Amino acid sequence: MEEKLRQQKANIIKVVLFGPESTGKTTLSYQLAVHYNTVWAPEFARQYLQKIWNNERRTCQNSDLVPIAIGQMEIENRLSKKADRILICDTDLLETKVYSESYYGGFVDPNLDKYAVKNTYDLYFLTYIDTPWEADDLRDRPNERQEMFDTFENALQKYNRPYIILKGNKKERLKTAVNAIDKLLSERMNLDRFSESLRT
Image (cartoon, helix red, strand yellow):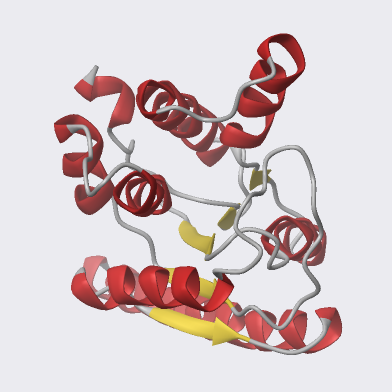
């Protein structure tokens, strides 16, 4: 199981859309992928849990979280090989860990806990709750948005993740995210040039 949760090495920049449900993560993931002409890793939990809801009329259970995490990493690792300079991730295992702790009394599967902390990314975009709540079959905490946002931010701070809070409308969020990613790309390019100069 551990191998399936492990992040494979890739010489690209990885950014994560991170935060509570219904805060625009998927929309922005797609916008960024289009902007940078690259691929984005969708949230596996959505398709996994929607299928369960359609077939069994039940919501997420604790036993679903490890299969969700495995599915998410399979997508990420596969698309890392196809990405052009940057991979946009609609979520990561740290988000799954936060949900596990929030919904199941602080419990997290030990393997999920390990790789939620061990897997790393270049930047997180923490999406604020100033977007309208959009109900669907899976979303269930419309009255706890601030509490969940604080929980996500606390996780980023606890594990010393680099992050930027995204607020405003879609256009404003996209502009902020693009500026941050452009800075990362420029820094990576300069580092590559420096490394190349040392080899010649």
